Amino acid sequence: MMETNSIPAAGRLHPHAIHAAAGQPARHDPRRYRQVAERICALATESGIRPGQRLPSERELAAALAVSRATLRQALTSLELGGIVEVRSCSGVYLRATLQAAQAPGPGPFELLSARRMIEPELAAMAARVATDANIDALLAAAEAMERVRREEPFDAAACELADRHFHLTLAGATGNGALASVLEHLWSQRGGLWQTLAQLFETELLRDETIADYRRIVQAIAARDPSGARHAMRTHLERYARALSRG
Image (tube, rainbow, N blue to C red):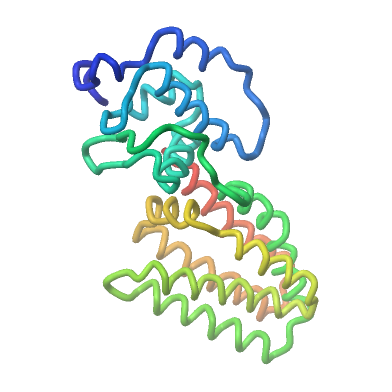
């Protein structure tokens, strides 16, 4: 936690700014982190924080804005991608430029995961019912390729993203329904810079091992023609990622 005297006088949270931010009614918008990003900008402006000065700690900001640390981190990441703040390891968050509303086009990571959790378990169940032997062979090959990439050292995040995408789209293709496969492909195309930055934060060796095990269970259930098992395996996989993304 940042010590109070580490924040320049002009950079301390103004009491009025804290009360105003905390007093705002919560809005049930799935893109809440964008609203939080705008409120961080407003807080910094009202508190007189200038470019080059450090913002309060995550704990202080989360308390002042009455939001979770996970939502706050999404907001700070969107501001960083927009060039408004700079996150320095072991130092804090610094204002980089004149404040403006953060721009983060497209759906956020939690929205994408929510959509995928509605769609992909059913795709897995459908694949278990209708996939051909060739489909299952292709899915097994995609899972094995993903495992090789995740086991490689040093870890290659870009290669992992491509292998992950290939596995999920191969599964969608195994349903034989081009419309559903296109929906999933569109969702994957929405994974932008904010998703990639957050993914690097929560990616761990344990999560990699669990993901590999998830893929094996998904393929095994589809190969066994077990729709219920395939649905459960995919839901477990996506919920694991949702929990990892929400940590903090």
